[in-house]
Image (cartoon, rainbow, N blue to C red; front, side):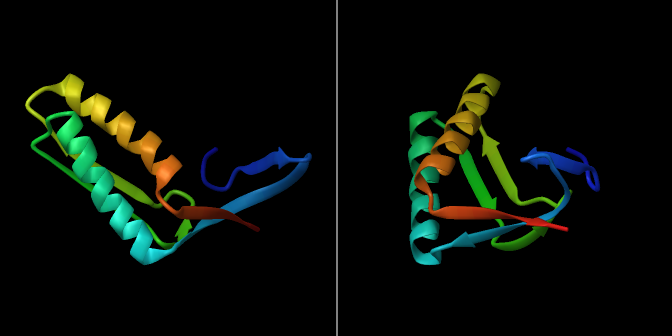
Length: 101
């Protein structure tokens, strides 16, 4: 969905998504993000991995997540990105709530 487009994904109710509110339990989320970055970097033999995730309100169209992966080989970098995102969604205590107009 693009910025400003109505959504009917909620029972036929056409509402405009304005933002996402991200909530975390910061001490645990930060610890889990660091541990996950180390694990993925080791598993995929990366040169480096940096992950940044927003907290609080993020407007539609703004960046809420940045993942930078450095690897000698493209295939490992792509596999690492996919694995990191899957595990982030599963293991890191970050919750999002839509903000409707």
